[in-house]
Structures are given as C-alpha cells and as structure tokens.
Image 1 (tube, rainbow, N blue to C red):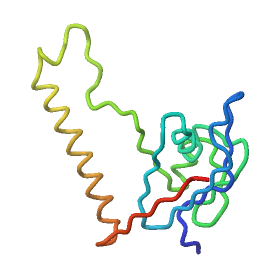
Image 2: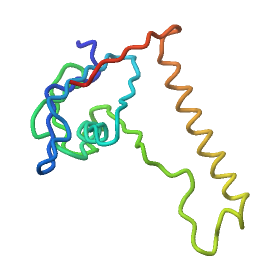
Image 3: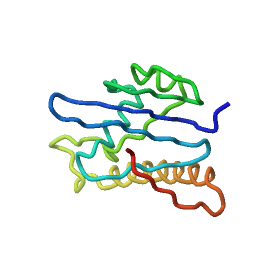
Length: 142
C-alpha cells in the first residue's frame, strides 16, 4: 500500500492558447495537509478542478492510494475519497433589495456566527491531523 494519499503525475491543461498547467507533479503523503499558493493565473484552481473532476487534464495521471484513477466528475472524486473546499464561498446568502445588512443585523450576525463556527471546527479537525511539531515543507509544483 502506498504512503501517498494522492499523486499527480505530468498534469497538463490548456484552454485554447493558454497553457494553465504544464507538467505538474505533486505528491501528498497520508496524514499531511498542503496549501497551494501562487500568483493569480498561476493555475492553482485549474489543478484542483482537475483533481476534483470539474475539468479533465489534457495529459497526465491521478493516483489515489497508489492506484491510477479516472476522475471524470465530482461524484467520482468523492467516491475516491477526495473532497473540495472551494476558495470562493459565501458567508451570507445574497440579500434582496428590501433586506440589507443594516435593516436586519441580527440575521447577518447569526449567519456569520454559524459559518465562523463551521470554519473553526474544520480548522480544529485539520490541526488534529498534524504532528505535534510539524515541519514546514514547500516545493514547487513542477
């Protein structure tokens, strides 16, 4: 059994003339947490969208637990044990023209408190997966 939870090998994705991901290789060991950072337009969201089945890579392989998988849609990703926390989420649902934060502050406050509690719970769960003294590791994607 592989010590890797997920491995991306040689992932390429283009949109017309724009080469969003070029030969991306990434290894994620079991029990680790990774963040992918970079400038706007660097291909981070595209790479994660490939992993979660929103997009299909033009080239490359995805391995889960050491086995090559085909992730054609989010349902396949979920079945493979892959979840997605989207970078763009809304803390408060859109308000109509007749309902604004300054007219119903209690509603907004309750929604923010609920979502904040959920985020804190997720962060606490993630922290429990880390060793007591985690070492910072960074590596370029390609």
